[in-house]
Image (cartoon, rainbow, N blue to C red; front, side, top):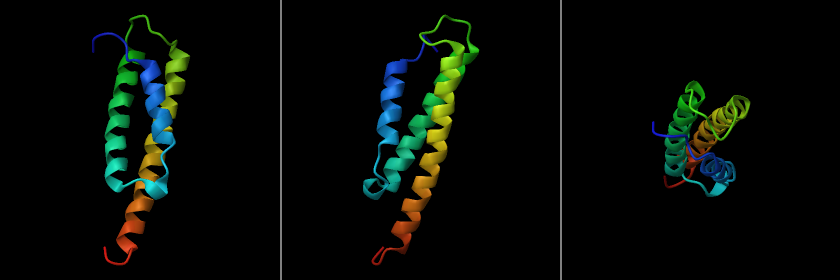
Length: 92
């Protein structure tokens, strides 16, 4: 990785993902969000493991990583609920 991740962008991304309305979000969107969250998680883990000076200190990066992991878990739960709802809907 070259440089540090853009933490402001990551935080904005998390706010968008966390703000999604499950009633108006498709399974596909949840799948796309999941991929982005996993990629973002990898960036933060790599940054946390590195020795380069960072925008955030190690504790802040760990807190951000925890937030990403919680969002991954929430995304999986919401995706499953939406998929089940769609599967049980008439005409699907």
